[in-house]
Amino acid sequence: MLGKSVWSVRSMHKAHTGCPDMRLHLFNNTFLAFAMEHKFRVLPHITLATIQVFVDEMFHIKISPNCARKTKEKALKKINGDHL
Image (cartoon, rainbow, N blue to C red; front, side, top):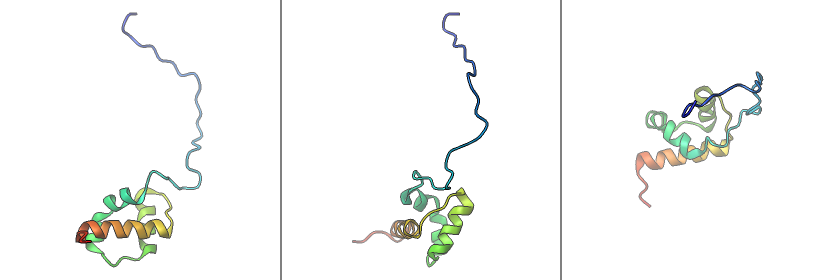
């Protein structure tokens, strides 16, 4: 069997134990600003609580109000242009 790989399952864990508190740190505000840019174009005066609800519906994760604020700031800077 030269050049062929043989794989076998050694153990199987049926329970998923990742992310029990519904927080993923890889979903940072830069990614969320990019992913939700279309929402901010339509609704530029969206509240932070509404942003949290949209993220929960879209990605099934919870974000803090501070993360929602930073997400909104980054998205609006990209949409409006950062003139500073």
